[in-house]
Length: 510
Image (cartoon, rainbow, N blue to C red):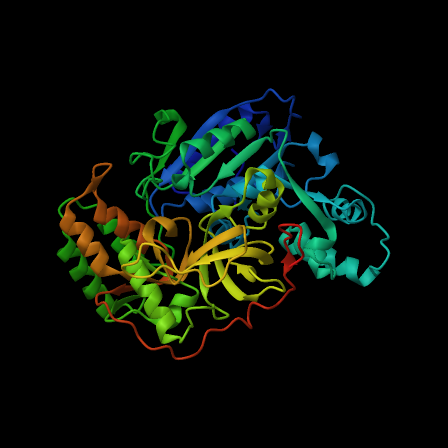
């Protein structure tokens, strides 16, 4: 095994060696840093690295990525693929959501979403020459309207971030200048790493196996299984040699109280009241855990309150809008939204690809920036997306307490649909992380009283584990159904850093 740059624990080292063996069978020898060009028939199948929060899965993924890159494997980002690179060995690092991919990118791992690998961009030939040059597959181009200084800015950006669209934006171009459309991937890729694989359903898993003959999953078996999966996760059926368990818990910092609380839930004797007592005790000695007497409304615009029950979610959303003075017939700039899918007929498949490739996939967290130029269009900032600002035909639904039908302040005839995002269910929060997370404790108490069990564990414990581990730095455990008053109005000025890339629907410009 080639010496990694960090010191692994025994279980991490064993997992690294097992993955190295799998890659060797696929023609990539990390020990000697040698590659065998793919004949298109290599297949090492599927392997999974599983472990609870803090067990070192992300560190292992990052070190494997560095080792593969050091051996000459080309990373496929989903934003551009050089024709000349198709004869090279490739790696794609994927996550189910924009937010999960952005968490990896912040740690130096060039991750993208599964949708961005399923759909590939079609570049204008003039600007494709710049992309080829940036990717190291072509000569420095001369492009009318772009100065040497602009090209230098693009090269400097790409050196730091490995994003072609980001580099072209640094040169002063917009996505609509150089991407003419999107197409479904026709040919398989090579090696795939998938983070947060506990979120995958069976259909997504089958799609990934078709694309990647060598597939490595990273997942947390203590999280909530996807809806309609009967409590199981896609890696549950793998045999033990193919399922690598990381048992040791590594502290993100010396003594992490949030991780301590999450792992305490594994104790079968721990009851709900015992757990809340533990939270309260921790809050008295560590300011990273807060015993909250009310929901902090200022946090809800960018970090939703995590709840279990839909009724709670709807009440909190309406309370959030009321304290900000939001009118029923319109959205305020800065209101958070959650993409709930795409409402388009089958004949508009290309438009669906446009929306999904831009990051408007089900569950995406979005900030409303204001109305578009035509009725029903919205300017949006997609949290965690590599190109976050878009303008799209939108159908916004505001759910009301005790009313079956949502109120729709405005809507296009078809396009991306959104629910309000000031509060979300814990299921929808999987794959995301925020610096500060508010968990609505009364909902978890209700789940505990129901006594439901999922995959052999009380449901409230699975809910609490997922909710707690969404917090990177600070956890607020809210114990009362009360909402604070805002200390400042909603804002979007920090998000207005680049022009929105227009998405055309129904033959119109936004």
